[in-house]
Image (cartoon, rainbow, N blue to C red; front, side):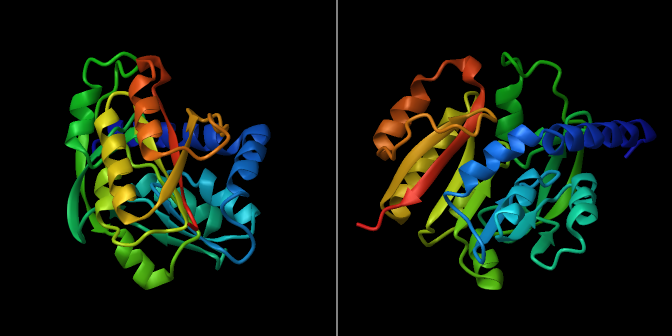
Length: 252
């Protein structure tokens, strides 16, 4: 890493800390949303933790957390914020279809969109709303799978997956239905979201809802079918940009 890249990363991580930890109203919205999935004594996985705002929410709700973050800068933030908390386990790794090592593309100016997906970077090139994004270096990171995390830490009540175009790869490393989870989608890669819906439907009987952007507000207010969710995501305008699809396993 060059000195300029190091400075850019430090500035960007500091900006993320303010953005993701500095808004009490947003934190309260997040807590209200996640209270439907986790509570005291439950377990949550945060796949792609960045600087740990979801970790903080899960902990406020009383859940223990396994947090995955492969980037050294954001991982240090999580370690600083939660290193003394025995109910937070930091795993400095990416999550994917298989265990091993993978190449991670870093955006020094905006590490929140760093990614293991070359297709994500290709899709962002020239896309509206993604102007000026540069993935300027690569690092090799350890990779684990959801199945391995479950073997090591137990079955989570909820899994949050936010990995910039690598979401389908993460779900490819899962071979059992889980009670509830979310995965990020972007309008530059709708096919990734559709692949995630197909994967979850193969694992179990899931219903779906979606929250756009960082609104923490569910669009439907009810669970809809895979096909209805797929049609909704396909019909969103490009300007919708991103959001999180929530999947809840049916008891039927």
